[in-house]
Amino acid sequence: MGLSLHSWSAIAVLVMIFLNLFLLISSKELKKYKRIHALYVMPMIITVLGSLLFTGVVMMAAKHLHFTIENIVMIIVAIVLIVLEAKRAKGLKYLSTKKEHAFAVYKPFARTILQIEFVLVFVISLWMWLI
Image 1: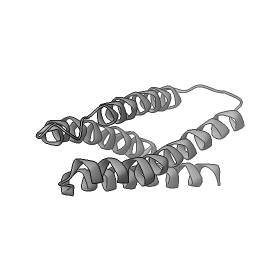
Image 2: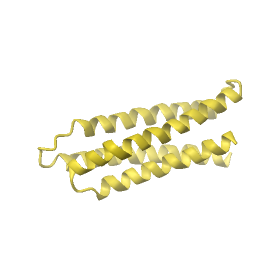
Image 3: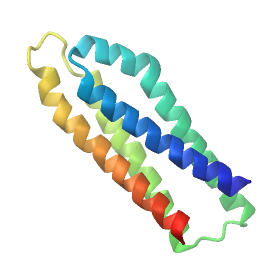
Image 4: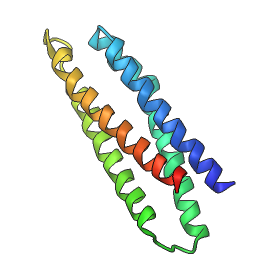
């Protein structure tokens, strides 16, 4: 059951990253995007990523903290995801709504981060599901 819950949490993270990428690409107004991101997207991303990390920690405890290469890679990927998401959120937080082309400059930066996150989660998930 723990492995199943962890797998579904990984799928939920992939869905949230994809939805966030879609929202970023389809948004035209910075003010509206910042509001939606602050009220809905960021709390959902944190919750889903937290559920993935929590189920991973519970499974590690169930294995009596037996570290394998897969576990170490997943821990590293989790840390990278947190750092990338913090960089993206910080960039959005300090983005001025008064500057004319600020959103156009931010979009490629955020899109790159979201694509990296998606690839990382997808590759590590495939590695775990196929092994």
